[in-house]
Length: 72
Image 1: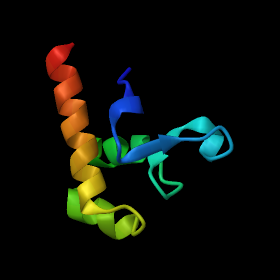
Image 2 (image 1 turned 30 degrees about the horizontal axis):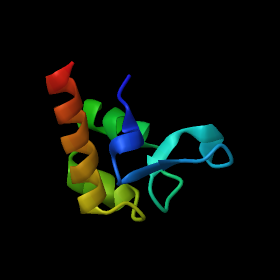
Image 3 (image 1 turned 120 degrees about the vertical axis):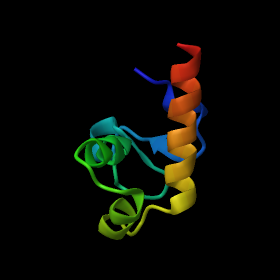
Image 4 (image 1 turned 60 degrees about the vertical axis):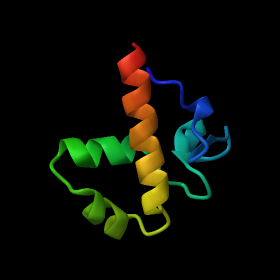
């Protein structure tokens, strides 16, 4: 499991989406990005489907995941 606490693009609140990590300022779970990418979606499609999420947030999440996995 990745430690999202060091990624500024996401937040966690027990009262928001059952405490799941979400893109900051939205109710869109980070998990949704990875599920959509795994299903073959492109980042541009994800951004269309979840208009509250910015490209910068997606890039920050992907970079954080890449850095975290490189260390693991």
